[in-house]
Length: 449
Ligand SMILES: [Zn+2]
Image 1 (tube, rainbow, N blue to C red):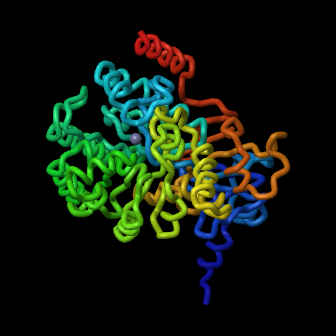
Image 2 (tube, rainbow, N blue to C red; image 1 turned 30 degrees about the vertical axis):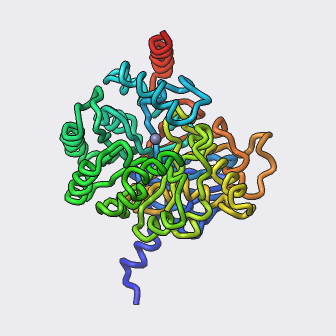
Image 3 (cartoon, helix red, strand yellow; image 1 turned 45 degrees about the vertical axis):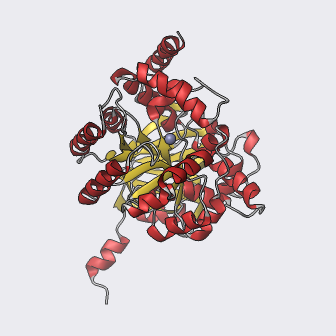
């Protein structure tokens, strides 16, 4: 029998900080529920409830009601692989294969110019671009991870900051020991941040020695920390590795105990059937960077096969130096349409699967599925609103198909993270865009001199 308290609490109207009434809400919950004429109620940065407007009106009340009848609300995108500071190298060297691009253009420029100021200006520019395009969380892998974590925290952007681990000396550290020592300090410095979560970012199996990878595996185990790595990006990289080590790169990661649900492999373009089985069996996550892989002619990712095998696949932009934008709508679009061409099947990677890859799968990859990646009661209020009533968008039959196959970045109008508005009417609320432009242009002059 229900007590009075039960009856009272179930009938009680809960006070929210604000309620958004939207034309549509794509929740990305387990059933891919899309509500029409729906509401999202938020309190203290957390979602109180989401559902049909009439139902929510009975359950929640707020002084602040935001009416968006022309908009679709979606969970904020989770950009699973980025090198944010490389925004300053957007378009710096194009139309080149990966190793020429890296060895002759990117690495020499980085060794000459990358310092704290470069990181600070580049990351700020990237955060501005990501927030404006609906991204509320990103994984970063670059020098000066302390600066990335600081800026993510400052601007209310969620970030998994993978501190770099390399054998080579760079502006940030002299060798593997110093990378790891400094990285452990950054983990400690941000352990209480609700926005920045710091983890290990060994560059790749082909640039980091087995001994260093083993040390990373031991420490990451002890700290229960994630590991983010580049793997199987190009055919040459995989064949050269096999020739030298007599083992596939992913097999080596598995041998030393790295392959697990705490590991995220960016790229995995050249994955054999046995690699895909190993990824699925170990719960290792994959971050697919379709635009970067296509532009660098790295190859065609088998997203369809990965999903069928049960591998968790998230999406990432990679850095703006190889993309050349941080546009997650475009990543969803191309990953879905390319998967159809690769599989020879029009139903390979549906719009819903592409949206899940850009949101909840990304959350799962970084171990934050309980807090972000979908719009459900109890999760963080990280979401964006996109105007689907523009002439070039009409008519709209299926909101999720629309989002993946039709929508454009410029249609994203408002973005919230932790229930706080960061973008309004397409404009960043807490960033000085004039200063951002000036800094970017100064760097262009310096780098092209
Ligand atoms: Zn990368």
